[in-house]
Image (cartoon, rainbow, N blue to C red; front, side):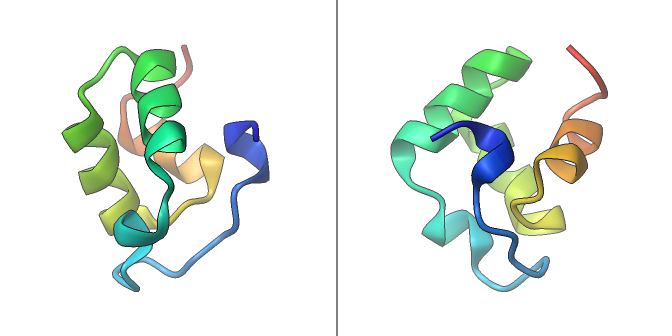
Length: 60
């Protein structure tokens, strides 16, 4: 499942807990960050791909 198609959850709603591990790894590879950075970003902004992208430093 591409990151763009992940379900959108409200920030702070436990979104990081519901994001499947393969998606966390895929996002970490896409943005050259650690899986923990992805989890923190998702916890802050939810799972909207564009919001996560901005949180992790913009376009790549």
